[in-house]
Image (cartoon, rainbow, N blue to C red):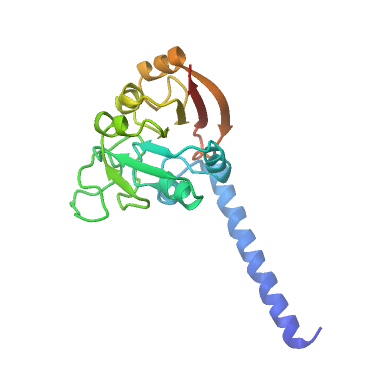
Amino acid sequence: MKGRDRVMARSVFEGRLDAMRKEVEKESERILYGPTAPSRRAYLSSYGCTKPTTDAVSAIAALGQPIVEMGAGVGHWEKALRTAGVDVVAYDDWSAVPGADDEPVAKGRATEHSPGPCENESAALVGKVLHGTPDVTLPHNPGRALLLVYPGPDAMAEDSLTHYSGSTLVYVGENAGGANATPRFFQELQRAWKVVKVMEVEPFSGGCERMWILKRT
């Protein structure tokens, strides 16, 4: 190997070694100290409340149905699905865009917000999210599968089921008794829906979200 090639090879090796060292330090910090506020903010900024994994997006695409998402936040899942070629429309009432500051911005940001269950998520839009509520939006989208990702502990998810007349639901979040939705939401799932697929996702450290695909009975 010529001298110049040796220098280049050494540079590449040292770069990889440095990256590996940083990853080991990061993982060691996570094990020793648990999740930190900066790591939580970084996760939310990159993925939203729950990461739209490749497998999850592929499973939704495999349904072969257009999607309507309620409570879409800033649009991480909308963007991932649209990038994968899925026909998706996403809505949020912007009553709780977590972590947003109080400065109203007319374009590209939610203008009404308050702290929610998924703290510190940036208010800057990532995907294409329209303003809408379940009672107004869902009656106009009966042919789309309904997507709910990490809904808050308010009535949004419950209201979405009430106003949705389609046959396919994709729910990403915790099980009954967790951080998401209301007891009546899960009671309605037990009463009128059957689970056809359950998938692991990649929640933030300590999270226990999964993705459920359900069909109306």
